[in-house]
Structure formats: structure tokens, C-alpha cells
Image (cartoon, rainbow, N blue to C red):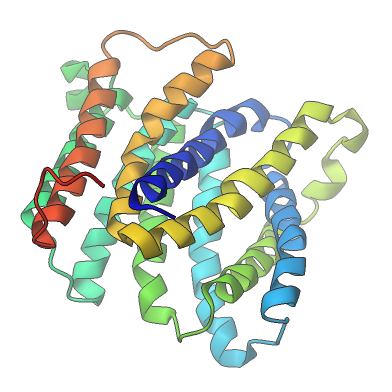
Length: 303
């Protein structure tokens, strides 16, 4: 794989991830968030099982593995439950913009837990991402910002992003050298179990016979695209161009959500929202330049 191809695949991975917000918005009211997430991660774990059996075999992780995977699974469960629950009260653009705060929370946790230096480029990118996010949420209206007119969904998902920021920061600290695929598999399994526990009697209350075929198709896509395929995309591209460059493309997600929502016939947001999306996009360029400078590479290098 060439460097250019790695960048391209990283962008496609973020497009797949962006579909979570738009597709999730479509099916959020079809059944409780805990049931939706049980099905999504259950499908993903089942689809992932043959690969794990082929490459690594399935071995019981022991108590050491269970507490590490369990902690990461809990943080992941909080994030994904808050995402789909919040989509019942807010829209896909707001949630995708709020998700760009995750690198900021990860950087803060990393500085505390791993003594990582933030660096001026990353700090500038996080600041841009925050400004762009606030612009989108409050639709460029300073009065709404001053009044802090957050709806219930925005506030709920913001709390979920705090959880996901800690999840990302803890992965290198809790990794014990096992294959990343094995770690991911057990997290999928435990997350599924946690959502089953959260859903509890909700399974009985779901009118399964009335669930539209489009909902099942959406769940299959969420299990395959944003879960299965992006795992391999992000893993392979991170080895080629580094995790920081790959993750910087997450700032493209709000723009992808705009395109995806438009393709679904939802139209475009108000003109006052667009500058916020553009500001978020600038954060990607700042991070990419920062990686080049820190690596001592020419900033006009073609990669």
C-alpha cells in the first residue's frame, strides 16, 4: 500500500464512521437504544468470530484480560448508548460535530495518564474543532451560545464523548501486547453482554414483527461498515501513516454527514451552520501539518 493510498483509505474509513450518525438518526426511534446496540455489536461479534478463529483462535482471556476489556467495554457502552439515545432528541449533524471533541478529551486524559505532550499544532487543532463544534450546535447564533441552549440530546452525547475520550486514552495503557484484533473481539463480545443487561425486559416490549426491513438493513450495515471494515482500515493505515494522522481525519465526519444527509433527501442545514463545518475541517489540515513538522519532514511533502 502506498502512502497516498493509506490517506485515501483513512478518509473512506471516516466516511463509513460518519454513516453511524445519519443511519442512526433514521432508526433511533425504531427500538430502544440498548436493543439497537445489542443487535449491532452482536452481529459484529458473530461476523468477526471466523476471522479470530482463523488467525488467532479463541482463548479465554483470564481475569487479567476480563477486567481490562471490561473497563474499556463499559466506556464504549456508555458512548454508543448515549449516541443512539441522543439521536432521539437531536440531529445527526449536531452529534457528528460534538464527536469532534473526542480527540480533545483523549489528549487531556493522555496528558494526565501517559504524560503525553499536547504540542502547539494539536492544541490549535483541538481549539479549532471546539470552535467549529460550538458554531454548529448553536447555528452561529451568539445569543444561543451565551444562553447555553443545549438540547437534551446534545448534552447527553457530550457526556458520552467524555467517556469515549477516556476509552481512547486507556487503550495503550491497558494493552498487554496481545493482537489488536483479539482485544477488539473481546470488547465487542463484552459490549454486547452489557447492552443485553441494560436492555433487560426491553427485548420483550419490542414489536419484532413490525420492524421494517430497512431497519434490519441499517443494522447489518452498522455491523459491517462502521464496525468491521473500519477496524481493518484504521489498523492498516495507522501502521503506514501513524495513528495521529489517521485520527485527524475524524474532523471530516461532520462534512460527510452533511453529504450523507443531503443524499438521503434531508436537504442542507442553514447557511449559518456551514462556517462551523469549515472551521472543523481546518483542524484536519492543522493536525496533518503538525505531524510533518514534528517528524522533521518538509511541510510541502506529497504523501
